[in-house]
Image (tube, rainbow, N blue to C red; front, side, top):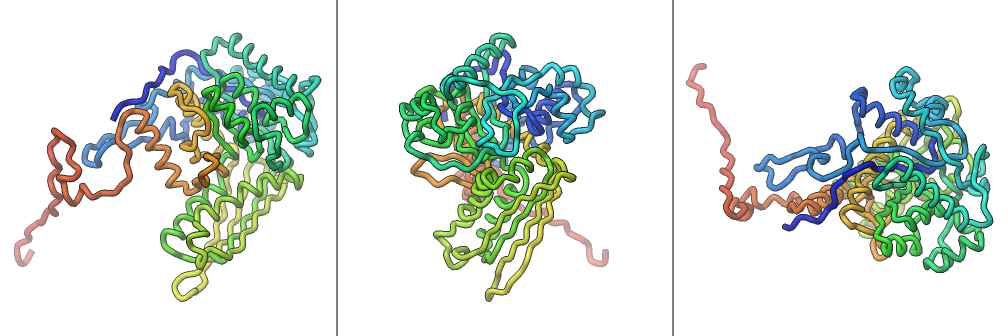
Length: 462
């Protein structure tokens, strides 16, 4: 199998983040601490996970970062935009995710990163008020200002490449309209200031137009429509999204496939969350909550294959709630009550109480998306990167395909894509070669010896 042509990860990689609050500051502080050997990148596949290559008996399992040519952490340079003027140090202190003494060793680095004024319109994020924001004659003008920001950042920091990951707030729910169908209609919509184009889509357009890979970490419409997908394909830009899969939804994409594999029925699934960070404040607005509700509720139908198994999953009740509770801060608590049915329709219950740290779970996802989107761009992959669905609640997919939500299927797709890029065979765990060694022996290789259980003879009476 031939290896894909991949440009080397040479020089500095600029990481641009719209929204430099809790998630972004936790991510940046973490990377700076890791650079100094003061922290471990737990949660990051790009830094810690190993990938199996070839047959099991070959025992080849290198670290992903040693297998594929991803950027070195030392070469990451951070910047971004925000509606608040706080440096990343101040943003991290205000967010309260990490302790001050914990991040003090990188205070100098964090204080040096100050956000640029953001593109913002309060009608899309009702519960926040901007301290700084861009002004322009129309939305196209704002997009051009963002493109100029990117050019200057790249020049001033000596970056060879850029990646953009949306870490901003959840915008009000929006449906696709005619303005989202073609590039021409969308660009005219930017010039005409149409309300169907939210700020996140302006950022996405600016990135894609500039040839910068883009990931959307919120449930916003952002780049999830034909016009920007087409633009990404035309410009050779990898894109992916949407909404980081961190806590409660990650659990759903583990548990629901397990029920389907065992053919257990589902009667109902009630989920509720309490959190007190800025995300909780934003989601206290019904319009923003609707965006989040759509992504959080979309996973079960897909994981359970409801159309294939109507008797098991055709009529279950699913409820999702998010409550803003300021005392909890970033330490979100998610409760799940799951009513399942088994043999002879007998009812059973599962209850999960996940006391998670939202930004701690999101930060390594940002790092991985930066690394793998940059890899995709250097590999000349373009358009929707469905192999990165592993990281999202509502992954983008081709229009003719349903998104894949099963965490384990997503991970296999992710791993096999890396194998294909590097000229290794994909792994499907079919396993026939372990029962008939002739089927699985590579040409020129010695066939594995059949497994024989070692028996120990014990003398009578011992």
